[in-house]
Length: 363
Image 1 (tube, helix red, strand yellow):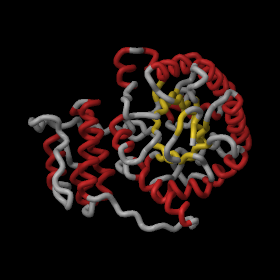
Image 2 (cartoon, one colour):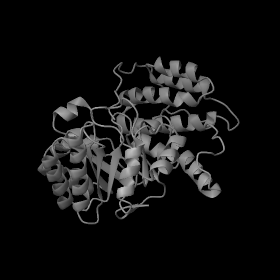
Image 3 (cartoon, one colour):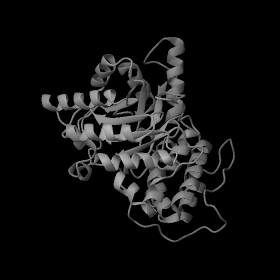
Image 4 (cartoon, rainbow, N blue to C red):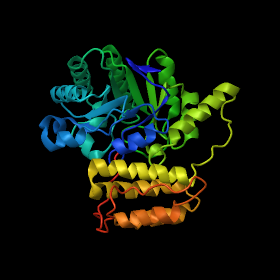
């Protein structure tokens, strides 16, 4: 599987999730089978402003490839210049976010709003493609339409055709409308029809992929080339290797929809992932921000623990790094593989409270 010149080792990728999918989340997943990842949406004007905003937005290393830098904005010129910045900083692919349904983004003529402003969307598609070198793949993320009207469906088709016409390497389609946000079911049947119409184009599919089984089911039912795993990857970095394992089993047996049950990660595997995740987050963000991010991550990781409800409540109550380590020592300390090291980077364990403001999910 290729997106332009970029070779993918697996048909499953990690989507960009605002407030979650930083380099820490990506690296923990890459070490567990994620071969391709996308950043959370990066606002073009922040990248262009330089300074601290640019420094916080650009965060990849040698382990974090291949990676798509996802851009969101409303003007062709600023999106084109921001795309060049990402390429200059080593991003392998540029993805344009024409899909985000969050109201504040839509009201600013960005994200999913492009499905109602095709002229603006086409201008951005052309400007970005012209701005980056021919060997750098560009992709665009869309929802199936803005709403369920025939006019909106036609606008989706116009953007899709424009992307192919300007040489975009792939299109990602979410199976909900912009107006739906995350309500109701994603329509996988539409993804199947799009792939049937464009068998020689690279189509990424997204929507309602919460488990490895879901990821494989989307691949089989729709025929999309790559499955975009978003919320299902939060606190579950094993979803990529599990999906690949399931797909391999079904390809070998020729039987779809049936496979040996997947075993949940053991306690030591969970602790290792939590420790890795916190350690990288601390390097990136410092203790306060890492603490906020990892508290909500711990809540998601907890679902694999044999005492899932109790562990989730323990993570919810955490307000300091000391309490974080106490939860790990109590619930994740020992199993057949022994004890894993604590995630803090020094002998000093801070008991200062984290800020009580949790980041919100904006996918």
